[in-house]
Image 1 (cartoon, rainbow, N blue to C red):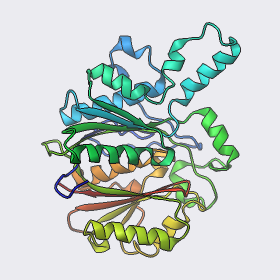
Image 2 (cartoon, one colour):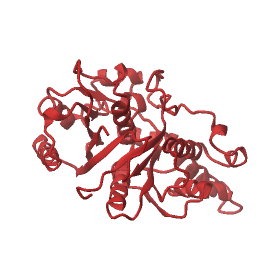
Image 3 (tube, rainbow, N blue to C red):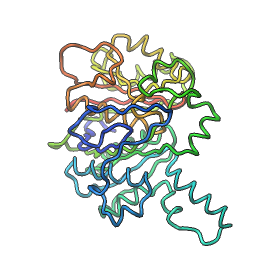
Image 4 (tube, rainbow, N blue to C red):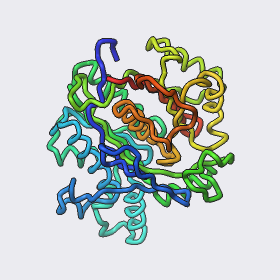
Length: 359
């Protein structure tokens, strides 16, 4: 993205395992889960989706469509220039239904709905058809980098003046089949814990989450602007703290930001002592004196969980307030919150840096 083009987040809609769908509230009600799978707290879908259309949609399509609708209403945009979505695994529940029926009926007289709603681009297509958007439409399915790739695409579209505003979204669901597979790989904790105690559990594995978040991004600010997405960078499989620290320092230098200027850093730790090793090192070195917040005890871990982190950062900047539930270190007693730095990791493979600035 060139130095002249800003990327403004002008609208947000998010549905997560917390009550996040009302933008005038900011983590005032906290949901606690006594299991290792966190599922979305949903609104009344009829307020956002036509009841006739609603009855035909699967659960995650309802969640995604509602999040997109909330975002567009928040940005006061009826039809964006394009739609970009991101997902790690897509609609697994619909895929499971389709494959089960395929086997049970021996490939005859199959229900087409399960197949149609199991494709990765089903949500991007649904949103486009619903709002009659005939512009750019793309879906990224790149596991732990899916949402970051979608954001990079949007930033390049804005920089090249191909679009003036874009709807960028992410979604992943907590499906039983995915949980079973990840348990075999020891990605989730074997003992059930409260999500609020995630970072007190010094064991391997994390907890499964889900959610859908949409952001209206534009090269022009508006009355509804939340913050500026200044830049982002991806780092794949850094082996040592030095390698990650070097990449982080170079990224900050490129954006002319010093560590002392960062008001809050959002730590994408997952509660897995093994996979969080490099983030723990950063916590004790580069960000030793920087106020820290965390978020995966609220939404769980999934491929596009960083979208929850971006919502959290944008909300902190817009509302100039940090909820107690996300604080993980002592906070500065005074001063404005101007710069937030996000460092996320997924399975100790996918690392990303994002800079958010107050408008």
